Amino acid sequence: QDEQDPRISNISSAIRVIPDFPKPGIIFQDITTLLLDTKAFRDTIDLFVERYRGKDISVVAGIEARGFIFGPPIALAIGAKFVPMRKPNKLPGEVLSEEYSLEYGKDTMEMHVDAVKAGERALIIDDLVATGGTLSAAIRLLERVGVHVVECACVIELPELKVCVSNLRPTCYLLVINS
Image 1: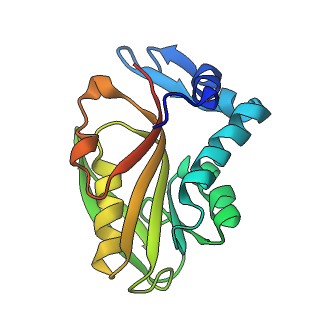
Image 2: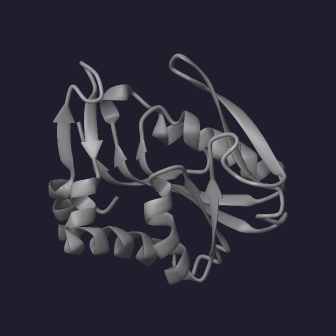
Image 3: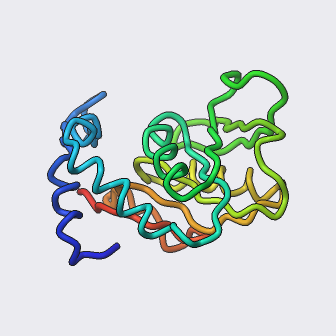
């Protein structure tokens, strides 16, 4: 991330932090306040677009649900299609699935079988990276069908969860580090 860009602090300031939500001990990063601040929201999209325009990305894969907020405007701006990556049984028709581990249990991510083609170049977008498990599942799902994942991008990183973002391959671009 570019620490010198004044837009970063504006974006960070626009994210409301709510302690003990949805349960005690959780510090919730509320992006709804970012969405209400038109300048901060535009700055968020612009920073991603500036980074990815001209990188020959044909797919922006958004992770449910908040990746659906940031992904489509980025996809439109860089001339890519938007591919939703969803929880099980949310997409009609034939899907590909990837199971992944959570702190307590497992989950599954799905995308349409015909959403991407081998050889395409993808960006994966989500609002926040906590443990990296969801991003890793998205990477595996796309790579399984021959898509080259250029990078993952998240608005927020939670460093207190000790995620090894530096160990994610491909790399993960983060706008705001909130603790």
